[in-house]
Length: 310
Image (cartoon, rainbow, N blue to C red; front, side, top):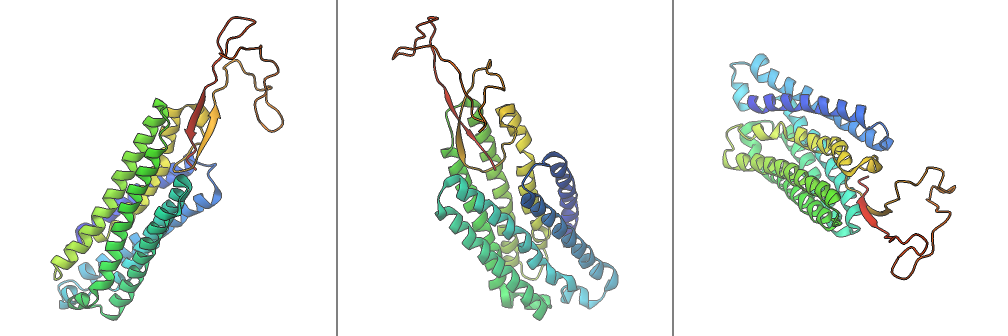
């Protein structure tokens, strides 16, 4: 349990740094997304405070007493519900982006189902810990803990697979755009694998070694993994946008595709109408093969598909 609390504290420091970078870099994001990040930061701060208090009870208040090894710390009650209060919104947020990107309700519906199932399991676990705080009684409600962690792991795997497939299908054939998509796919798979493995390890240790607290090595830092996975994805947008060029400055993660035309470099800003669409006052006559009859040059229209992430 102490190791888990230590990892939790380290990951909280990462959350603080990532949150600072986000608010300094992406000031033009939609207000509700910025409030969502603020919500995650506040809940993570509360979770860290609960874990510190939870460690204080057996190590200081009840040190060298039988209660330390027999009765769960009082604030362990808050652990499951606080974790799902973070993981479930992150999973639902990602499900929403998958719906927009894939234009299909099926993958997002599956993700939402397992996310809500995990939430119910987490709430049930909190209630059960409150009713049965003795460690030996935890096996009596292993169904709720198993439902919570297994559903969360399945949801993370479904997110990683759905996003990877949706992004792969968004490949355009343009080397720059496809390179960015490949980077996003790698990040999605890595972050999804980390959270899924942590949830599976948590429930596996709980079931295999019920009379130990080894599962808390994975349990206590679990919420920080979800928050950091989302923040790392949000903060990685700057690097992706730099690769795609300044014209994609406002591109962000997991959005629909749009089509844009590559304009000639000589086009001036005043060559736009009141709707912001480019206008060309004159084009020389061309043949069916696209040859300029006046100047003897070829005219080729190039259309590039780019990714609008948010």
